Image (cartoon, rainbow, N blue to C red; front, side):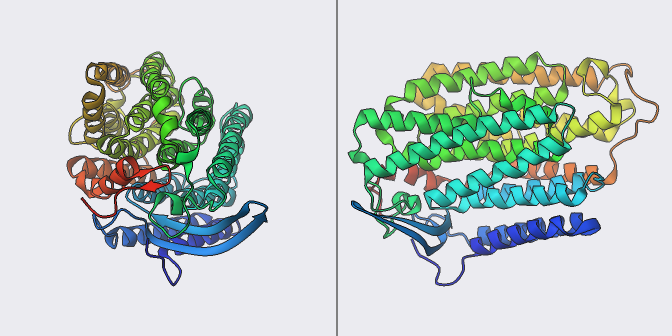
Length: 512
């Protein structure tokens, strides 16, 4: 791993996003412009990183910077905590997705009147925390940013949310924070059992000079227990059944922009933690726990799909569909092959775009028609054709229509499932059929037929909402037709995670 002798662009990214978020809180009437500019500059840096990313040259992190931070001495040695940042092909898609969804959220809420400086500042702080999660290669630095993300989302839900916002925000924080504590305890236990030489999991996973955690020496039973704790901690954020009940309440009560970031990015943190830490660092643990993980994945897919089918509230339906889609992500991770991990990362990227669009649409339907109750609205196309068109595109993308971004991701996941489990693939395919059913049924009731429940003052999408949705639609189509634009970054990192690195041992030293 080549280390930057000067500040990495990832450090610039973190610094600009943190300073921009802080400035937004004090920008007054200019807060929206500061937030938008900060997110746009961050996106520009990410695009520069993507252009300069070396494809297929090494199984390693790039744009790495290591700065000594803290050393704790003890009788058995020392624990080093470094400011260590870097990216590979698994983290890069999320680095791109975060500023896109931040820009979309800011533009959508352009006319926010309830303490706009606070709102846009919290959105920017969420984006900065997400950057930190996806570039951190030190366990404690990773965990610090993981916790930072919870704080702005708690206030976004609790202050700008719906009628039950206080209940939803507290439930969100309790579930996710308890899971975080369990994860932290498991991380420390893994370090102590695996050796005191380093807590830098970037060095452990990569071929860096930093001493690796020798987790292979941890016996099978402790590994299974550690993996179970991490699986719980990361899985609650995913979310997996049965620890998913915080998600619908948080989504329904959150402001639209908060829902976009929550579904588009925060859910991805759980799956990212599984890919980055739990599965590669605890190989015996995940092998022995595989039947349980697969069972929970299948349950999440089917349960999420049927719960979505039974919903009347459009936003709640979309929220439950996220459980269904993230269940497919969990299934792909559990298979732990190059194809399945590539599919999982691509599906998370696709879900971020599509769920972001659908939550924007839920917000627009609510303030246009005064309700999100699906049976109460009909004939939308007669009054709001642009809104109806966006709703159709988002729904068709979510059910996996070819030429839209979810199709190549889901097809890859099902292909990986067939290769590993053969006929068990029909269980997630059943979930896909139910997903198509509830989206098409929703469209049939809301978009077509005689007008029903349409207020006299109902107007089509305003300019800022059209722009925010149009950006996501363009990307959904672009990456659906040309998925290689994002897939090209993932496979080598997936090979390294699944085949070359096993609990502190690297067996691949060059590109095969």
